[in-house]
Image 1: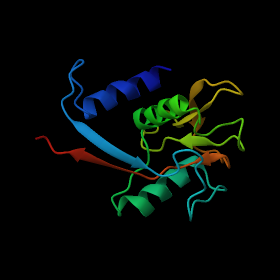
Image 2 (image 1 turned 45 degrees about the vertical axis):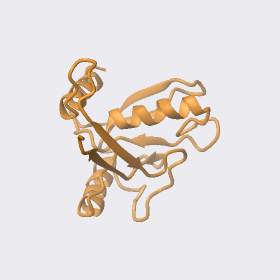
Image 3 (image 1 turned 180 degrees about the vertical axis):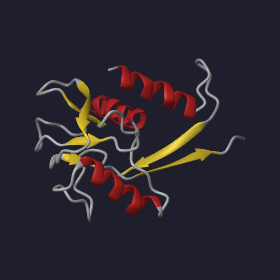
Length: 148
């Protein structure tokens, strides 16, 4: 969607991407890389908007963020190379990653999941005001690597 295209442009700007030149490195450590479990305190009976707010309040004060779309796509690409896809709908209960570090737009939030039983990534827009018991939040920490 155009919204997801805007996300990539925004991430490139945030990460100071300049053409094909590498200008620096970031390290991201993301919890539940293969099969994310429900985080302690996460309420699957709450709406996605409420869950996102809870996550930011609970983890933000500890310096922990969720994942953005770019980080989640990199995680999924790496998992395909290893032959162990994250959120593997063939292997588990069809969970998908709620990409809660992307802003809500027009009452939608962003999600990443597999397209049915295929090994194709689906960037999906979910209504923020719905419950989604198969949505999983991922705690993540990102730090800049100092330039030498």
